[in-house]
Length: 346
Image (cartoon, rainbow, N blue to C red; front, side, top):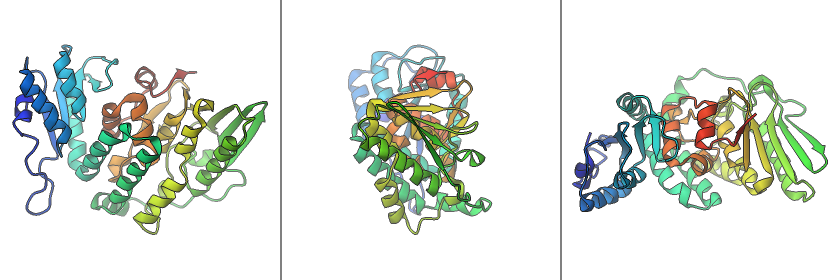
């Protein structure tokens, strides 16, 4: 662990790749509890943080951060603070900062390539237009598809059968100027496989083309809105380049974004991956009580690939998005509401 002065002096600027091609200390913790820092030192620390290769995690206690320290926290990839702070998206409130740091460090140690790619991606996607940010996310995702961490996950999992065809993977219901789009694969927790995804895209494109549709409600049949991508289809693309073109040429999240104020998503159950990422594009997200939200992709050696590095930071900030993805832990409904991941609980 270093401190702002150490960061300013170059603690995070040592070579990341060692002589054998391995990663050398991918995560560096920065202690923000050590009192006042001279302004010129703080400025150097902020500059080093913005240009650094490593994943930088700030650690602080229950005391409120001074404005200067908050400026540094904004430059770091995330900062762990003890307490219930909700008003600053750059701060991740935790009961015990040291224990939370250990959890983050363990996740980075287990999947350092995916963690570093995600941290760097989240530094740029909030500043890009949505379409360009989705391209950046997809480039990163395809890079990791060819990596050792994803190959290890793919080789260790049990084979899963693909979902059988169903007559109506998506149900459409028109009521005046409202169109309700229902994901209709409850036996698979509405996992977004090829067929369900294609039907969902058709429905959303229909809504975009019809000016008489003033409101689009997206929901899922059964107890779960969506459990994310269908794991049976992970790793089945012919190659990473094709996978990139498939993701970017037909993105449900982009269509939800283009619907603008017309889009409302109603979520419930244990939402994961794309089941969190796509709803976050909507103007309004309503969650049933007890809904949870989880991003499991880092544990697969990947980053969120359904638009989550674009949509979620625009709601809760890049820092809390990174923490949610690194830990893979479920976020409960009250916290999701307090952070802005959902707009209402009903």
